Length: 494
Image 1 (cartoon, rainbow, N blue to C red):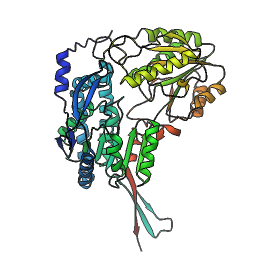
Image 2: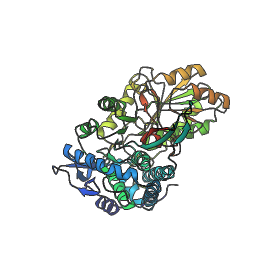
Image 3: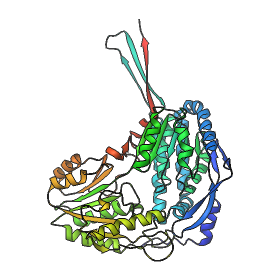
Image 4: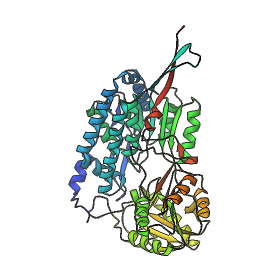
């Protein structure tokens, strides 16, 4: 039974009123240079929640220069002190989980329980990298010829640029800020214009936790390319980390090449979800619900193509359709709601277009398949079978609550079909055979595989993809390496 939430209109209004709406630059809350603002829309109603400052190109330069000035002193701060700041921020996030979760639900749409879960997940990046901050090490080696010594140290990369998406407005920020702060890097972070409020509330927390002025700067802007491109090309920034679409990632890589800017990219996905004939079907259905319906399907890790062995496809499809059909759709603040709205009308229409395209080619709708009546950008949880091979949804990210099911017969066939995409972020495999599970996991072309589990992301594990799903890794023991340069100091002994 869902936990009663009892969120009133007054609670919503108070949460929005208490959220900062200015830019956070050099430790201060400031209006944009030209006084412009952006409407923040509640996707469950289509109406504006509030307005926030809209950064100009000059605001971007002000933030970048603040990060540049703060870099040397912050890199020299004792690692334990940086660790303590992160731990304080971790505790404050947990203390304010209700406020953070409510604001996230209002601006992004996800159910309140899921938003609070994201707060806990996001906070864990700060705790994990607080522990990593004091473990940055190096090495000492005698030269093979004996005439010198090699002292190897690791130092902060320098000022960073972060661009985060709207679907996980808090966790995608802490996943970048955590290792940067642990390593001693300053930053300018641009959240998505659709969901700036959650990140502005995080800036409040970081300020209170003791992050020095200029170390973290938050720019909200409606003209991302115009504001961020000069900073990428500036030569001041030494690292760019982006989470978003592959198309935008390609453009950012081109811009980064001019200054040989270090980059990490978490880009699009087209995850395959494979159910073999020996799988526990009930567990596979549960895993599919997790992999498909996290964030209402608006996730790069979402199961986009579900392949089920012919011997179990009828049972699996029927059970999945039953589970999907039982999900309640509505505003994320309402009791019992499991599926919120799409982020905007454009995304809602895209999901509808993909479903309509598949159905026009002969796909069968087991449940859902339409936009519900009323306000907001909702789409009914949908299960499709018999999808034609040429359907758009086989090659495009659905980014919505739609589960397409396809039949396969052999292991070799399904591996080839899963790998037949330019993406390679994550795939999922369900089988009771350990040998088959490992064999197939090794054969799949992706940075991550969920073997008999529908969620793979964890702050303590490396997250990232191959092929056109990205570069580098976030989280885990590898996450902090993205923010450290290796330096050799050769010592003459003669």
